[in-house]
Length: 341
Image (cartoon, rainbow, N blue to C red):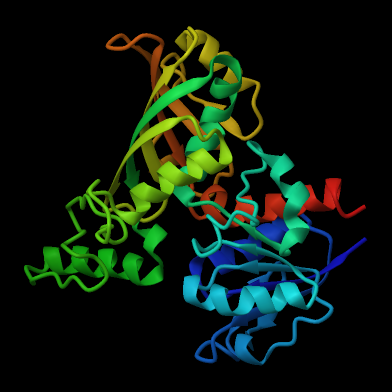
């Protein structure tokens, strides 16, 4: 069986990645439609060897569409995802708009595929935050084996997580730096070139005394919804002058003992994870080395002797792929395999 697929936000970084991955993984499509705002209508994007002309989202009729992969921004998804779902399409939304709705599954296929059983309640499935996805892929086998009590995570996130304009700003600021021109910051609150910014998304202010940003809040609440509501999470999110790839230093406190060697074996046996150990030629992995890769890469695995049953590790993934587009396509593949027969 094949499916008519629409990609909303096809002109953006994630939309283009979705089209590429749909083709790479031979997703069973009968037709692919590229959708974006009227500003992008008429432009072309690639789907394998085909050039697709982008259509105006506001004028598109979703009737007869089977899957909608949506990554246009929260406000646009809020308007058009329900319309597509009402027309009979299954919407897999990459924005944050629906993630905490009780009747919308929030899914990482390697972690909680069973949550998809309720997808038909609204015909909308939410793709989690990019930094949450890679962390939970890494944590799932540990939680199953030794039960996680607490997570402390510090993220080091690339500018691509903030979109094409953010990538352009890093490029332009770097160029101006070497020309002795003053760099201009329009996307980020402060200079991103040759710098790091301990703020991703806006600070939560109304009714909040935690000092968290929305990105940090997402990692807390999404972990509880996807993995286990009993887990305590402390998240610290930092933007770095890196184009692609998010990195995380993760510390976990477990209920039961688990040695670094035992953790490494669990990860080696877990789909979607690649372990790089100190004995390998690479020793550890960096964002520059995994751009374009699908797995979550784990290295620098070691015991944390400051707490009982503590473990530290370094976790890196391509945020455009596993952190966004790939996870969305894997959700659809799971639906096709287990629910749409």
